[in-house]
Length: 435
Image 1: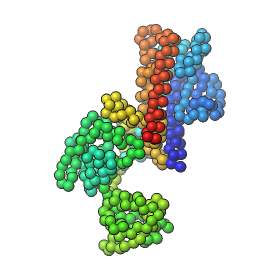
Image 2: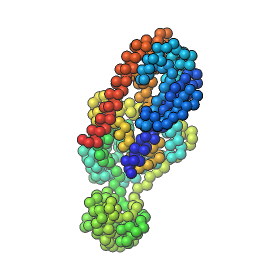
Image 3: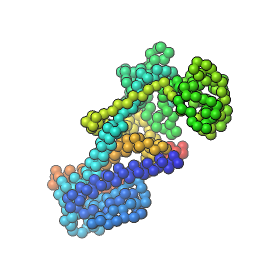
Image 4: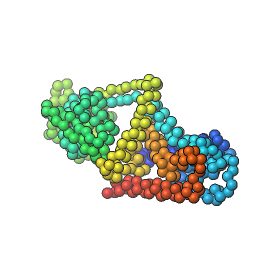
């Protein structure tokens, strides 16, 4: 079920943002009276379609993307037969260069507007929930990737690159992960130390079967006991504190979680503290190793809400910030600070959506992907929108169109480059899964 949800989110998400991108081209073309022959969500074979005016609107069986076919435009279809005929007044090639330029940037314009609107909407309707670093009073739980850089469970991170910080999530903010160098200042048993942040930390965190980096070390008590659970049958009550399990002292939640990992459908001997008294109980775990209660932690998240005006500024900043962070990530890749194994394709993107449906996360990822699609499409590579913009810019400045032969060769090169990149990222996804 989890994989089905993950794949559904990927298909729905890509269909939305790619469909909107192609809609941008379609609307701009129709605005200038250019005939649009096909508009498809998904790639052939066609599932079904309907003809409205000169345009066939359809859905394709292959769901990862879509396309628009504009009459008289040389694209990856290489329709030479049409281009050998005299241009008609409603064809792309018969229109002034400035109109063709607007048609070519119509897709990225819609993607940018969509991305900004998604981030504005999230800021206004959802706001921001965060854990203040001052709430992490008991230090951190350092998992394997954190231990590999020198962090230990119980450390308190007090500074990042020599500066104090407010939000616990800032420890793994894009600014930290994408920097060429950096360090954490920690308090370990009352002594301050510096831990260097490796340049490939982002790769460690996105590797196959990733573990959490760090989490707050939290004390806990029983909040809600599930009906008919092992916890209820054993007599656990709200506000009980588990202080021992199978003879091992329990102070923090992660200790209890680790202990019960290998105790699925087994009986656990626990000692609880209830109103100052210690009580011994026997509790049966379920098939997942759970006792059947919701814990209450000794930390408190804070919530920020934003006015609509504030949301406009914040959402716009986040939208363009997501592009900048991706550019920085590409820089680390080209500098050799991270390996090409960290480059993800559709499978990697699906894994980012996760196996549980979370609408806030869904729209946030879609906002990032929409902005990233706009940026990637504006790269000056023939076959992409950016390549067409370069050729149109040349035409506007020089007054001369590139020849059809040149365009055919350029688009062929661009097609090979993009297909090669697609094969690489999909192969990378498969390699990361199986090796």
